[in-house]
Image (cartoon, rainbow, N blue to C red; front, side, top):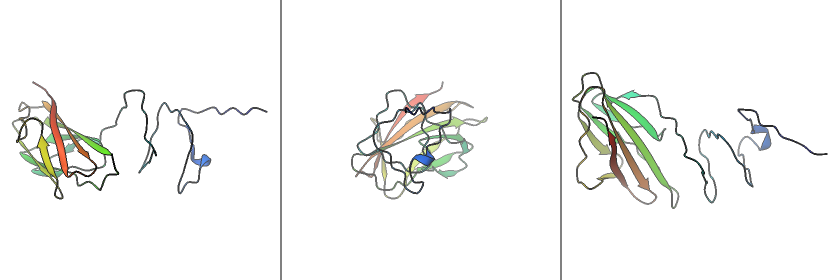
Length: 165
């Protein structure tokens, strides 16, 4: 007798492993995989296509905002001159990296400025400069940054990757 498993558009694998500590071995291919919480992939995770990341909902900066560590992509509308503080990060496993992309967008007024800070003893090292690069100043214009940190380091490596004109 041959068994065939037909995967619905939103497969539910919860009955395949204990819910408290699910462990799967072998190989699996997914068109889409959502992980809520922490996931460990042993010797690594291979992605053979461009991954997509869902950004957190847009947040307003106010005068100061500590960026949450809950999303890899954050969208921040500058509603005043602001100091943005990078999230405090727990210790990363050996050879691990963490990346945070921040999309800054000027509000309808524009002309807002941003200062960057690192929390909990971390530092920020900017690409080719000792200071943060300028951002788009016109109303509703965007500037995108990427911040990366590796295991064993307390330094966020930072670069501006795009700016609207």
